[in-house]
Length: 290
Image 1 (spheres, rainbow, N blue to C red):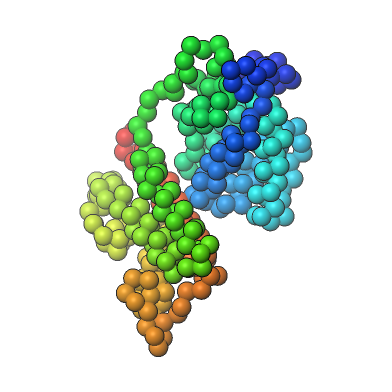
Image 2: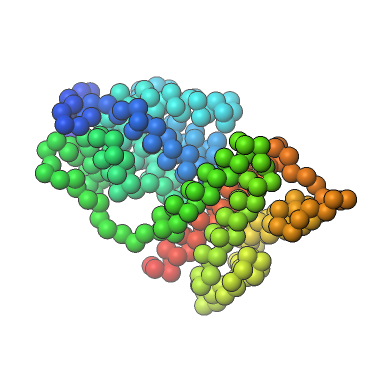
């Protein structure tokens, strides 16, 4: 848990140069967007419930699991709005929930990213070595310790642009192009495994199919093996003229046209694979650095 003045739990500091008492709606919105991005790495409903539990506790309300993913999203928004009435406790809930997510092997915002959100929205706090400090009393924002950037951070702009473009295409009624964008992103993310070492044997392939085959060979019987297999099957089906036809044209006699429902299913499926592959890449790289 974050360390801060215990009296802030009952009466946070009043506003001054910054928003100290509560989190402004724009800040709540950006923290919500970060949660959505975390949720791309695993089961979205489960991630939403995880953060909802943290914010419900912060807001002093009883946590009850939602009846569906849609309701989980709505209930999380409500819990975040209530928790935002006390800025220190809101930041504690978000930070602690992210720390637990990282323990699951997924990427989640750290102190540096949280501080950047606070700075953008004039929120009067910064995290420094697990301590929550009031920016009103600081001559400058306390910087989080420097660390090696991750694949997800270095490629964040590229990934975000592609995912957003896919979502836009679905909204415009262009499912085939949306799936094509997602498939391109899957191929791009997979290339990050080139050079990753598996006990003295490294991935050397340059293209999607080569890399996937090597991942399966080097990690037999693991979740990575299964995800690589499923990714390859989806990629092959969607590329085939008798499947989705997004790579080599559609067979007019036997091809399967991608409609809105199919487009949404394939985009969500590919995003789940991308989230897992990013997290697994960071785990493997972390072991190598250690």
